[in-house]
Image (cartoon, rainbow, N blue to C red; front, side):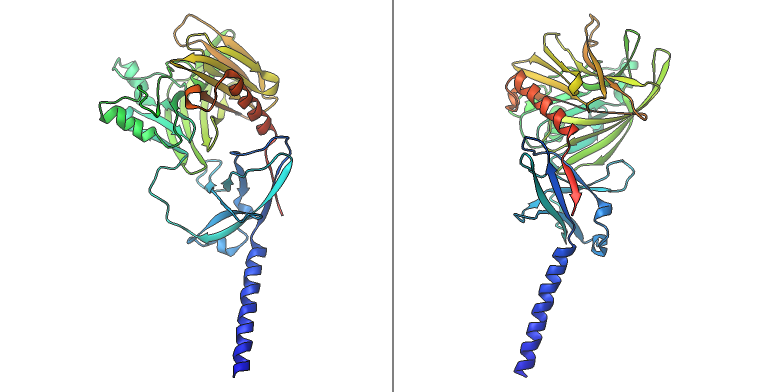
Length: 397
C-alpha cells in the first residue's frame, strides 16, 4: 500500500512537471530587435492577436494576456488595442527597453484578470461637453485639445465664449499624472483657472485660428485654406500605453477643391508627440502647421530627414514645437508670415498616399524640465525621426 501511494505521488509530480512544461512550451514567444546604435525605450511594440488566439484558453474571458520578459521574468505593462477603429481589438501593446544593437525575448501568458483600479489611465482622452465641446487628450508628458461644433456655432452667432478653429491647442503640464479633468473642474467649478500655473502647469498657449501644434491646411497658389471645427468624434481607447480617437470635419473649400477630412489621433505613453493619421480627399498634398505666435522663434528644418522645429520664448519660459514624418513623405516647408491675426505658421508639406497622410506633432516645454534648450528639443525630434524610420522589429519564435 505504501509502495502504491509512493507511485501515485510520483505520477502526480510528473504530471505537474509535464503540465508546467507544456504551458511554458505553448506560451507564444517573440523577439524584439533594435538595429540602431542607440538604446530604445518608450516605443510601443504591437503583437497581432491572430498570433495569440491559437490557444483555446485565449478565449477565456476570466483571463488576460500578460507580457513577460523571458530572461528576468518581469511582467511588462500591456494593453489590448483597436488600431483601425473598427471596434475589434487586434493587437497587444507593450513598451520594452532594448539596448543598442541587441534583442530581447518576451512571452505572452494568460493570467486571471485583476479588477482594474478606479483611476484615470496614464494615456487618457475624452469629449468635454461641460466646456462647450472640446476634445482633450494627454499622457504623462503632454496634453492637447481641439474644438467642436458648438464652439463654432457660438462664434457664428456672436455668442461669447466660442472658438472657431481646427488648430491643436497645447496644455503645458509639468507633472506626470493626469490633469485634464482636474483643470477643467478647477476652471469651471472653482475660482481658480487653468490659465494660472499653481504648480502643475497651465494653458497659456494661444491657438486662435492658427494651426497650433499640427493642424491641417491645404495650399492653393499662395493661399493656405483651413477646415473649421470638428463635427463628430469617437473615443477608441484609453489605457496605460495608448489613447486614441477620431474626429470628423465637414467638407471644406480650398480654392476650387472640396476637401474631406477625418483625423485618427493617438498618443502613447512616454512621448511628446501625438500621431495623426488623416484620411483626406480632394488634394494630393497637405500642409501641417506650427503657429508662429510672436514670430520671434528659431526655425530648424530638416525636410530630407522628415522633421521641422520651432523654438520660441513663451511667457517666463521657452517652448519647442515640432512635426515629424516618415522619410520621403515630407516634400518641403515654408515659414509663412503675414500681418493677419493667427495666420502665421511654419508649415511642413506632406504627400497624400492612398488617401492618407501620417505624421507626428507635439511640443516640449522648458519649464516642465524635459528640455532645456533648442538643441535638446531638436535632438529629440532628430532621434524620433530615426526611430520611426527604423522601428523595433518583432518576430515570433
